[in-house]
Every structure is written in structure tokens, then in C-alpha cells.
Amino acid sequence: MLNFVLQVGGTVVNTLTTSDSLSQINTGIQTGSLTAVEPTETKISLIDMVMKGGPIMIPLAILLVVAIYVMVERLIVISKASKKNATLLHSIKDMIQSGNVANARSMCKSINTPESIMMEQGVSRIGQPVQEIREAMNKSGGNELARLEKNLGVLNIIGRIAPMFGFIGTIIGVIKIFYDISLAKTVEIEIISSGLYQKMITSAGGLVVGVIAFVGFHWLNARIDKLSNSMEETQIQFLDTLNEPSK
Image 1 (cartoon, rainbow, N blue to C red):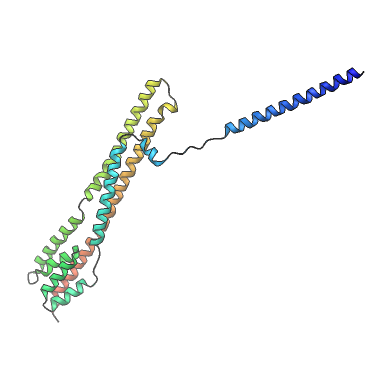
Image 2 (cartoon, rainbow, N blue to C red):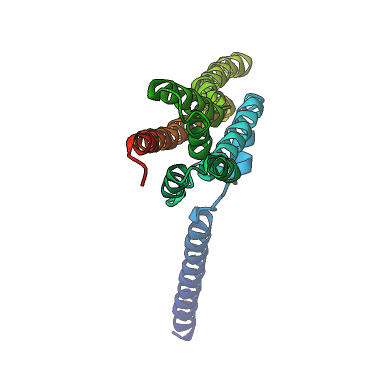
């Protein structure tokens, strides 16, 4: 009887021990599974992404630098030229009516803006027919506006050719994809990822550079057009001043 009880007790203990071991093993497996499932976050910097675009990104980078340089340089020049002297026309009118034409010309030259240079041409021709004065002022104003438009054609060209460079990079990327597939004899994301990166990044780069140049070109032209309208108004007021009777 005692032997039977001891055998039963040993069997129960072995069963409990086995159950505990299985529970620990299952817990370890679950813990290991959870640890293995946790994703690892990978980041890619902008520079690394650009480098994946391949050699075509070099001319695109050069075009971007040139576009930004032209935009900043022209913006500074146009901003200085657009500064309007509110008292210029009134002061010149008083000098002309008092017969002090030389001082009026000197004042225009000292201010040295497209508007004042145009008016200096008109002041220097006082006494001639109004039509000749108008033509001289128109010619002077046109020359000043042309000087402000210098290098804007570069922005226009960059805005047109930058997307073309991006398209060339796209074609090169597609060629690279098919070449890698022919070497690997299989189509997997690891095989074609390099070509896809080059294809998409060069396309995006060309469009970004083109948009920047396009926006800069039209924005600066809009500012020049605004200055041109202001100069036309000043010219009309100046010619009306010549027709006014002296005090």
C-alpha cells in the first residue's frame, strides 16, 4: 500500500514539473517571438537620398546653384531700382519752373535710379518738342529696364532644361533596372531598388529645380513690369509739368 502511494505521489510531482517546464518554454517562445516581431526603424537623410540619384544629380545641383544665385542677385538689383523718391518729381518741377535746369539734372544723376535717369533725359531736352522729349525718355527707360532684365533668360533656360535632365535620369534608371534583372535572372525588390531610386529621385530633382527657376523668372519679371508701369506714370506727370505755365 505504501509503495502504491509513493508511486502515485511521484507521478503527480513529475506531471507538475513537466507542466511547469512546458509553461516556461512556451513563455520563452512567446517572448522571443514578440522580440523578433518588433520592427527596427531606419532613417535616410536627404543627402543620402540625393546621392542615390546617380551622376545626373551633379548637373542638376549646378543648375540649382546658378538659379539661386541669379535670383538673389537680380532681386537685390531690382529692389534697389524700385525705391521710389516721393519728392523727386515735385522738386524737379520747382527747379524747372524757377529756371534751375542744371540743378534738376544733377539731382536726377545723384539719385541714380531708372526713374531718375529717365527723367534726366527729359530735363536735358527741355525746350525741344514734347514728342522728342517723350521718345528720349522712352528710349532711356527701355534701356534701364533691359539692364534690370539681365540674366533673367538664364532662369528661363534652367526652368526648361532641368526637367529634361530629370527625364534623362529616369531613362538611365530604367536601363539600370533591366540590366540588373538580366544579371540576377530574377525580379526582386533588392535587385531593382537601386534603379528605382535613381529613376524617381532624378525625376523629382529635375522638377524641383525647374519649378524654382520658373517661379523666380516670372516673379522677377512681375516686379520689373510693376516698375515699368510706375516709370510710365512718372513720365506722363513729367510731360504734364512741362506744359504747365510758369509761376
